[in-house]
Length: 219
Length: 219
Image (cartoon, rainbow over all chains, first blue to last red; front, side, top):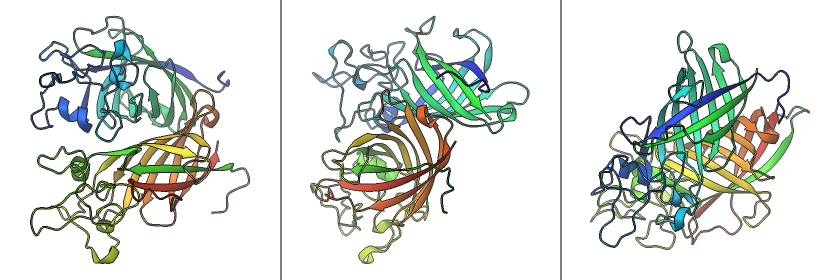
């Protein structure tokens, strides 16, 4: 996809952090969202420990959930995926729901992620990415994403809207740019989204997913 | 709307199957979504049978739900609609929620539907339609749809995004194409969506809704 000359290109780094002490996203519905928020009756608030000899469902980073572990992050939500989402990490099978679709299918996560100019969370902040992603495949391998990048510069008026399917675990996903405001008025185009391993991986403190978004715009 | 000459047109057939043994969609929230997933405490998992002399709520195909009937599919969710969605099939009144809006108003269903080249589920598969639809009218007669058609061809990079209101029970609905990637880079346009009666109607095994989508694109 060599960008045509008139395609202005720029890069955004988006930090999506689930659980831990300073998350930027929250699963709000679907079975997993409800477990995370304790809306499923008798469900544990964080980290699902099944009754005796039940099967433990791994966390977003594949590790077994500790009940009150520091990073007691929700199960199988988020963009980094877990064993249960079909990639058979260290032998843990995909957990299916009663209808034969994956347990987390349909989990809606609301995001207020941080956008920076470089891969490091501490690098120059550009703004916020606000919106939702929805676990949209039966085997838990994709998330439908719909969000707006609100880029600071004056009055937060420079917004870019993204929509499309993020493929967990794959090196490259494509989202469409469905519009923009301010500087990005009438923009359309697409974005290449690559998952990176965040530098200070918040392993102990929640699970961070770092996305490198290369935006190709056409006006 | 006679398509302008430069409008490339093509057809997709989308199979949306709820309940039964091999569903492709799952209602995840809203009253009906929660009843279907048994997240409403003391709610029956499939097929809502009210206590003594209560009113039974019909299934998606208007039939009375049998408690453990084979096709105990969720109530009034999906694209085929039910009596409760305003069309007064065999005299069953629209069931209203406590706020006077229809019971299923707001039910969110997540889809991972199958796209084929022909109307038959067995015809050549083209890819998947992943996204959501939301019951978006007070009388339960429409669904807001937001999904991406991921058309196979190499690396799943040819995606088309659809957004708009599907009108249950009407011969034609119009959705917008809000963007695309790969082959459909920078696409926009609209789609005519017609409901068809699927050949082997999965009457006994869940309820299939077959949509014929005629896509008109402009780049």
